[in-house]
Image 1: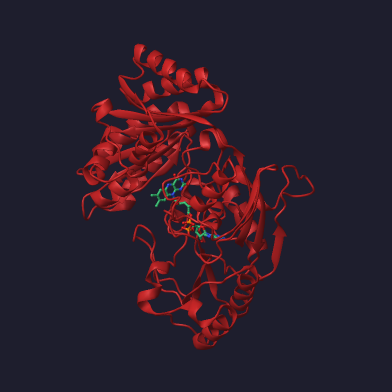
Image 2: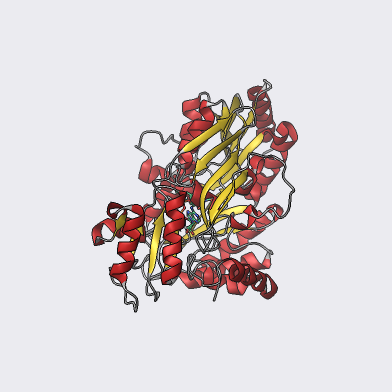
Length: 475
Ligand SMILES: Cc1cc2nc3c(=O)[nH]c(=O)nc-3n(C[C@H](O)[C@H](O)[C@H](O)COP(=O)(O)OP(=O)(O)OC[C@H]3O[C@@H](n4cnc5c(N)ncnc54)[C@H](O)[C@@H]3O)c2cc1C
């Protein structure tokens, strides 16, 4: 603990221990480390303590104590965020705590008729998915970190993932929220209603607000029918243009049965094979050879005939030259192995060395031009760097990550890529949020009136600036 303060830290810690119990106020340097360092080990800084409340009442009491003492509060779920939002900022003045929701894991109600579930904010996404599956339903939020990400974090980042194409971002799956406001008051909007136009839909301002407007303590989630059939295919495609033609073909043939459509560069798959090729659960891509690009697509439905329709569509795509080869999973195990390839890309990239991440979106039709221009610009300006591009191409969202040699300045690489994103009228953060990672650039790429509106919102909700200080909004 290294916090220079003009307030009484010992008294504050006593007060927090009085609320959550001494064992749930973590200050030991070793024990606090996972709470104050982010998943990429890129961000982090000192905190007075990591505090682990057991329920909403304790969260509210902790927030009230912090508000009274002027202590900043960094909400944390699974700490898998990629923007440094859930951990302190190194060198930032002023005392702050990490408020971990990890003990609040209850799944309270799964309603198979109304197709809803009520979860506490600390519930791990995969556990909620399993509970939905047990009821014969689907919680359609899905992404690589689902075994660790917690729903409060998922909601507060408005996470995307692989099913956005059909089911939308997390926002579309949230029907109700319970939040603790900056003054410690609790607002319970845990209604299981699919329709509710009675006034402002206030929950929306908390979704994606990265812990800067309030603490999410529980949510009612919308579930959807669980498709009985799925068809998962990995296809070699010659170019990103061909991938878009394939997307149009798939939608023409399968309608909104297309649930996921991921573009993956050949290099991304090769690094997965290099680092995880021997691991259980990671299937090889050998069946589709060595191509410059791949598409991992999935279609799902319940009315029968899906597999035959996918097969016909793939044959047509190969005849048209949109795909050069492909494998359609024969079993659930094989389908999972294909997804495992996709889900290991981020970890494989981590194993390759330092990388500069760009979670960008551009209009879908501009993806091929964006990829070509941005790749050429990186090659021209940053010798020794290479592009690891993959992403949810059906949503216009590319993870255009650049693996850099030691010593290369990441900001220069960011600038190169984001200038091109801006030329395509894209977004510098499609799904990972702003946190502390993108905060400097937001001031450049968001318009002044948009920033002013966001500051008014922040001022209204958190006038003392104690909720996740220094994150999301440039000062
Ligand atoms: C391998 C890997 C793959 C990923 N793939 C995707 C992907 O495909 N799509 C995607 O969108 N993201 C992805 N992510 C990013 C990350 O998993 C998501 O942003 C996730 O939603 C974060 O959840 P979390 O519980 O870990 O949140 P944390 O990292 O703990 O927190 C994230 C932000 O939310 C705030 N927060 C957390 N809990 C609360 C709460 N209860 N109330 C208020 N604020 C809170 C934090 O302060 C922080 O600002 C990936 C990450 C990894 C490591």
